[in-house]
Amino acid sequence: MTRKIAIFDTTLRDGEQSPGASMNTEEKLIIARQLIRMNVDVIEAGFPISSPGDFKSVSEIGRIAGDKCTVCGLTRAVDKDIEVAAEALKTAKRPRIHTGLGVSPSHLHEKLHMTEDEAIERAIHAVKLARNFVDDVEFYAEDAGRADQDFLVRIVEAAVKAGATVINIPDTTGYNLPWHFGARIRDLRERVDGIEDVTISVHTHNDLGMATALALESVRNGATQIECTINGLGERAGNTSLEEVVMAIKMHGKELDAHTDIVTQELTHASKLVSSITGINVQPNKAIVGANAFAHSSGIHQDGVLKARDTYEIIDPADVGAAGSQIILSARSGHAALRHRMSELGYTFSDEDFEGIYQAFLEVADKKKEVYDEDLESIVHERERVSTAIWNLDALQVSCGFPLTPTATIKLADVDGNVFTACEYGVGPIDAAFKAVDKIVAVANDLQEFSVKAVTRGIDALGEVTVRVTAENGEVYIGRGSDGDIIVSSTKAYINALNRLISDQNERAGK
Image (cartoon, rainbow, N blue to C red; front, side):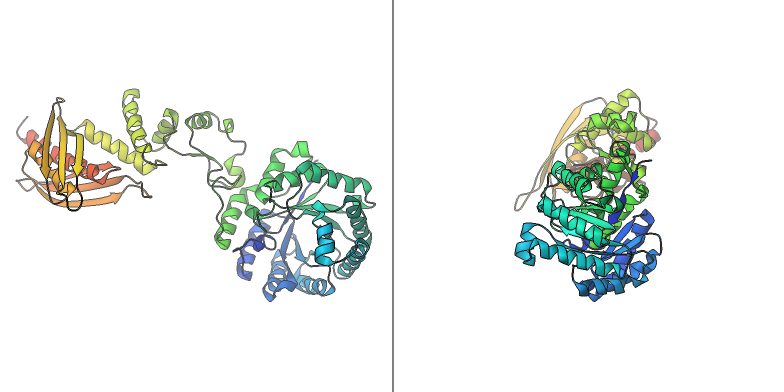
C-alpha cells in the first residue's frame, strides 16, 4: 500500500483571505458540507479570535462534521488565541488547534522582535497550552521556506517534544524552488528527534506559480499532509490548489508512494460552488476544473480525441465530475470534428454534400470565435434552402448612412446559373435590397411580417430572419435566412419566401 496523504483544506481560512472572498457563516457551512462529501481529512474552519463570525463558523462546522473529519482552528502562539480556539472547538468530535509563529529572520527580527531562543520558548509554551485543551495540536513554523535550517530543526524538535502531533512547514511567501523545499523536508526527517511519530504537513503558496510543485516535492521527500484550497484561493497569488495536488497524486501515486481518500468526482462541483459563493471566477485554462480543461479546438487534437480520448487527455473528465470532453468548433476545427458533431445532432451527409457543409462552416467560423450547435443547424437549413431554390443570392452590396440614401445592388442566379443584376434605393438598406430583388424576380407579393432573432449568444451571433409574404391569391409564404450580416440574412429570407411562392405557382400551372 502507498502512503496516505492527508488533505488539509484551508479554503475557509486562508482561502477567505483572498481579497473579495469573505464568506459569512452560512456560506462557510455550505462549503464545509461539500468538503465533507469530498472526504477531506481536515477542515481549517477559521481563526476564532479574529471575529465573532469566525468563532461561530468554527463552532458550527465542528458541530456538523461529527467524526467524519478533523476540524481545525488557527491561532497565534498567544494564550488568549488558544483559549478562544479551544472554546470554539468544543462542538467538534475531532478538534485540532493550529498554533505557531514566524521563524524566518524577517519574522523574528522585524515582526516579532524575538531572539531564536525566545521563539523556541514561545513555541513550547503554546503547544503545551494547546495540549491542555485538545489531543491534536499542529505547530506551524511560519515562513519556514526562508528560515535558517539549523534553527528550523531546533524549533521543530522543541515543538515535537512539547506534544505537537502535526508539524506544518509553510513556504509562506512561495519563495522556494521545489527541490530546495524538498531538501528542507528531507533534512527535518533526518535530523529532528521524534519526527517519525508526527505528521509532517506543508503549506505552500503560489507567488512564483509553483505551489503544487512545492507540495508534491515535499510529499516525495516525506511529507504526509498537504494544506490546500479549492481553486487555489488564498493570500496574494493563492495557495496550493486542492484539485491539482489530489489529481497529481492520483496520476502518479506509485512514483510518489502516495494516495489520498478524496472523492475526486466532487472536484468540479466543489470548484463551481466556491466560485459562486466567493464571486471569484476560475480562469478558463485552470488545471482540472477550468472551463477549458477538457476542451479541444485544434483540428489535430479533436481528431485524436475522437479516435481515442487518452490521445490528448490524461484524465477522464468523469473522474473529476466534469460533463465530458468538449469539442469546440472553431476555424481551427477539421473535418472529423465537424462530422462528429453533425452526427451527434442527427445529420448524415455524403462526402460531396459534407464538403459543401464544411466550407459553409468555415465561412461562419472565420467570423466567430466559436461555432455552436444552433449555428450548425442554421448552416444546414440555409444550405437546404439554397439547394432547392429557384433564385439564389449571388452578391449583395449596400450603401447607407446619414444623410445618404440607402442603395442596394444585387446579383441573383437562376436555376440555370444565369446571373441578373439590379440596383434600387429605399427608406433603409433592407427595403432597398428587397426592391432590387423584386425588380429581378418580378412576382407580385405583399410583405406582411419581418422578424429577427440571434441564433446563438454573443455579439458575433448569426442573425436569423423570418419573413411572411402574401401572394395575390391570399396564400401566405414564410421564408427564412441566416448569416452574420443581418441585411444578407434578410435578403436570403425574402428570396426564400419568393422561391416558395413561385414554386407553388409553377406547380399550379403544371410547370
